[in-house]
Length: 109
Image 1: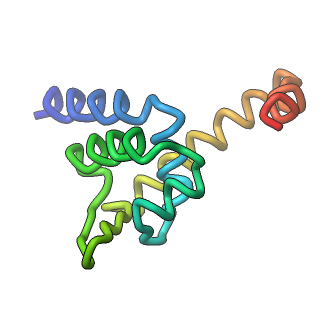
Image 2: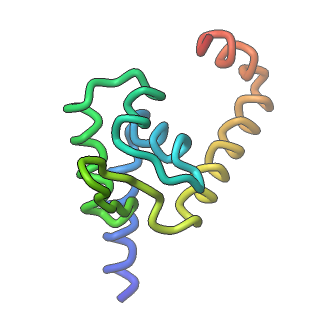
């Protein structure tokens, strides 16, 4: 059973190894938003966003519901957001230790 869990873990990590998908998690947080709202916040084409959302939903990272013509998405488990925040904190600490944090922050602007 441990091997199955490790394989699933690796599969989820592959899905999460994409900056746009991490951005989707960051945007959604504990909110539920429509595809249009997410696209507007990300400045991304709907077709591209739909692909990301579909992959994330298939892996159980997101849940969706339809309301009229709109599809609303939310994070399936709040621990997903916690895990992403924790990894971000680890990376920030590592960059800070190396004295590289200001370089990374200024490149992001």
